[in-house]
Length: 403
Ligand code: HEC
Ligand code: HEC
Ligand code: HEC
Ligand code: HEC
Ligand code: HEC
Ligand code: HEC
Ligand code: HEC
Image (tube, rainbow, N blue to C red):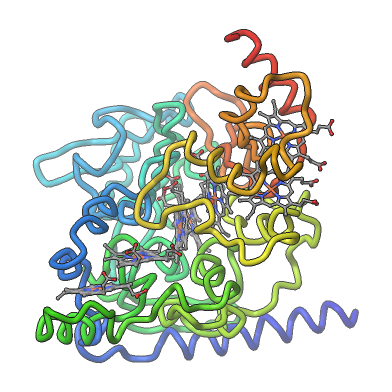
């Protein structure tokens, strides 16, 4: 056998063994244990942060499915062929995706969980016999339409795609796993019903806070945070790792990512990736913000730049704010302002990101909508900050039309 192949096989097998050990570990009290207080408790003393956080994609990335959390319209149909269709049905007993062949009902499954805040897309899960399955029809926001779930067959609805806990590792704060079974290289997980902490909450990023809450409740005079990691005192790589846990793409876990705490090293939780393309230009823009950003000159040539240099973790910022962030380093005074000379400085100053961090099509998130022959890719803001010739042409054309 080829040496590399052998290495890859050994690697996969060892990953599965470690993975099964870490996910089958029993979690004692409650879903996350007594160390955790829950986000609502934090609101008591951090009201402003809590209120703005409720509008973030992190908070909204998973919800129990309901008329208010599911973005699409009901009693609408997704058509596969003349004979086959799925109807989004609002019945008295709940919301369902119903699969029909020649108008005869074949499959009926409930929208139980909505994944995705609905900035771009939402996909839905149903629960059956201890497992989560993805429903065949997702919602594609930019098309305002239902669409075939990414990677699903185009010719017929598929209702049996099982969802692993890794999905919840990036889209929730905790999921209750009852058991993990292995048949060969195949893993089947059994979940605890309704044992899910929806959204990415305060303690998912900051670590458990019950002791912090108890201390500050008992000592309301104390202004120094106790029993809580001081994010400001972390090293830059530790700050990056807090976000990279979920923003560096799908990886093979060494330990459950739910155990990750601020200050931890991400490399202790995942295996170094041997299959990912080494060149940033070959990476998918989806989910690899960490790799793309750290390959950018802005990061390489400056000290201590991290995700918070541009993003406020507690609110979703608007576009103009980002150009301001660029100009905290790139100014005419320091001779590293934009070198493009065809547009006035005042125009450049409002549009840095459209030219240097353009939204590019994702190869991995593509959705097929009714009446289209090929799927439409979702477009995602690249984090490789550099000069993009073609995008610049488009932006110049758009901007000069307005001038
Ligand atoms: C009883 C009041 C109280 C509650 C409830 C509370 N905190 Fe705090 N927290 C404080 C005080 C006081 C500080 C220090 C002053 C400040 O930074 O606001 C603080 C600071 C912090 C800091 C900043 C640490 C630093 O110095 O960098 C974080 C992070 C934090 N709290 C997270 C949480 C989380 C998460 C929760 C909910 C699990 C929570 N807090 C609930 C009182 C509270
Ligand atoms: C537990 C996993 C997880 C962690 C940790 C995490 N994110 Fe996210 N983040 C997500 C997911 C999932 C989405 C997509 C949410 C959606 O739209 O459904 C997202 C979306 C975002 C977005 C786009 C949404 C918006 O409001 O513009 C930004 C920006 C972002 N994350 C930044 C960060 C930063 C900065 C950190 C570190 C401080 C971080 N994330 C930590 C999982 C995570
Ligand atoms: C996506 C990860 C993430 C989530 C979710 C999150 N935080 Fe933070 N928080 C951070 C980061 C990163 C910093 C440090 C920001 C910086 O470097 O400026 C921070 C800083 C803080 C601080 C200290 C600085 C300040 O702004 O006062 C407090 C207090 C805090 N967070 C509380 C909370 C509370 C309460 C919640 C939930 C309502 C929450 N955080 C949710 C990542 C997060
Ligand atoms: C390694 C972390 C990670 C895993 C695992 C993961 N996602 Fe995501 N997902 C993200 C991030 C980050 C985004 C935000 C898009 C981006 O990359 O900019 C996202 C975006 C999405 C969106 C679009 C949300 C929006 O409105 O923009 C959906 C839907 C989604 N994921 C579903 C899933 C499902 C279903 C699974 C499991 C089969 C899954 N994801 C596994 C990190 C992850
Ligand atoms: C923390 C400071 C800092 C911030 C914030 C920052 N940059 Fe940079 N950027 C740099 C440094 C340092 C370089 C390297 C300059 C050099 O090579 O002399 C750089 C390089 C660049 C380059 C050249 C890249 C290449 O491949 O040649 C571009 C384009 C750029 N930045 C655009 C931006 C944009 C757009 C933003 C905002 C979204 C931004 N920068 C934010 C520090 C920063
Ligand atoms: C130099 C500034 C800058 C830095 C540093 C930065 N981002 Fe961003 N990020 C942006 C801009 C600009 C957008 C686009 C915002 C928009 O379109 O509203 C963005 C968007 C995103 C999105 C949403 C992408 C999409 O199109 O759905 C995610 C997720 C994200 N950032 C995560 C991160 C993470 C994680 C880090 C750290 C590894 C990071 N960002 C570092 C500027 C930055
Ligand atoms: C209309 C598109 C466009 C806008 C808007 C724009 N740039 Fe540029 N930028 C370019 C192009 C194209 C170049 C390469 C110019 C050249 O080398 O002749 C460039 C060059 C640069 C460079 C130097 C890169 C190098 O090779 O060293 C930096 C730094 C930079 N831009 C930062 C910014 C910042 C910061 C903003 C916002 C204040 C901005 N740009 C706005 C298109 C744009």
